[in-house]
Image: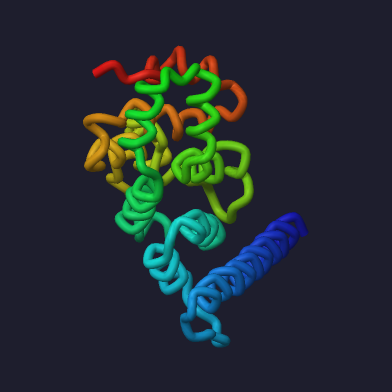
Length: 212
């Protein structure tokens, strides 16, 4: 009986995840209709929805992580390269050099700087995947497939899933703005995971202000 109950619960969870993906399709298609693209009524695959999100702008860039969240561990594991592309795309949605320059020239306080970082796509993507929104997904976690910090790349769960991926931190290190604004970018993603515990994040990473 217990085995049947578990199987039933798994089926219900999968159905709920599929409903979430259908809801996301409505939102994603509506975005493209609003900017003049053709309406699409037929069901789309998660892969197609991800492609659409990556081709859209800032307003749709976060939806891609929701799509990944409601697929499955096997889907995420088999398409880590696209997930990495999604993080690079998230980093591209904000002008990091401008944030870095303005915060320095205007002498922003730590409070003002952190508030600005909370508005970035990177912060919100991190919060969705590793912070307050991390539990809203199906079959596993993002941490099991693509850790946030590079020191977590060798986690046993990664070996279990057979992935040799890097980490969000290492992906961002390849971004064109990282040499100048990398400390702010990392602060944003680490803070996204830790939520309101911004002081601990800042002290641990020592990256609130970039004096280089």
